[in-house]
Length: 268
Image (cartoon, rainbow, N blue to C red):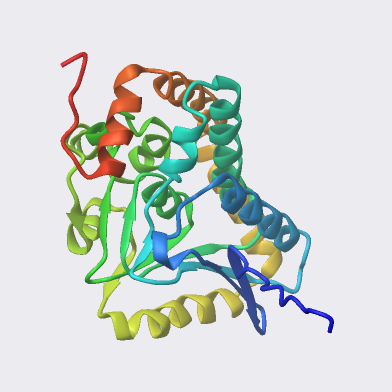
């Protein structure tokens, strides 16, 4: 008698769908609030690179499954490489490349934020061209709470909300609600959860009614004139975060968070 084994194909990290000229990318690790692991970052980069070369795509919607949009980097993965600065720097460089790609993509990118967006997840929202949030969504850059200052998220967030508000988020690590995010400039619209897709369609319908060539040229010029120092800022922040991950307090903070206990800071 022969025995047979059934292989189970794992769910893809990133779901990709098309609705006419609209491409939708959906982070697909709902049980963990869609962390930006190295594999998720690679999947995002590959999809964005493909979309950039596809003129039939006129706009991109970026969302997530489950209760949250994106909770930031995968802390378990980062902790497993805690003393490897080369690995840490590569992770932050790869993530920063995705963030830069969002601004360099010929097509407008709209974040669909249905739930919590923290740390690099908040950064992801900040680097999209537009963002629509459910009124139950919350936002934070809480790295300071676990010994890892949100230096790379700060690059995008500070360019959305301004210096004082960005530092409030970075120094306190506290959540802000969707209405505050709207008032501060992190998102464009706040609507009831059931109205998210209709509001997104309002934006995409307008984009589809405009000239593809004009939007491509206008978006490219907008980011070039707005902040020519964006790439150097990400280079500096990536190096800073890689160094931060080597600190003893970073190890303690992440371990405490994963163990759901209070951190015992060495350098209080």
